[in-house]
Image 1 (spheres, rainbow, N blue to C red):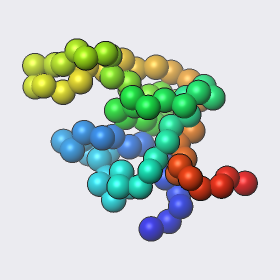
Image 2 (cartoon, helix red, strand yellow; image 1 turned 60 degrees about the vertical axis):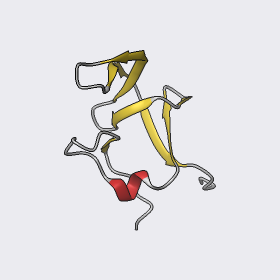
Image 3 (cartoon, rainbow, N blue to C red; image 1 turned 120 degrees about the vertical axis):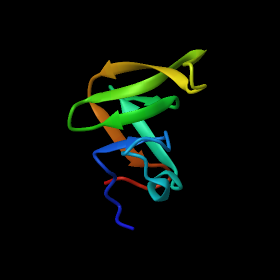
Length: 82
């Protein structure tokens, strides 16, 4: 698999942007320079992340999300960048 991460990725198996092979790797997300651990979906080109909103669930039992806009940097944890 290449080291290039997708432009858009989701942890929801029902999403067309779900990719189990990529998610099996240790992916980290920096949003506005800060490490985020509760990201449900991201899009680098559009500059947004969807993060879970506490313990709230929707009617299907999935976490409720909030969309935040700003610079998104996905990376592979443990890999030396540079």
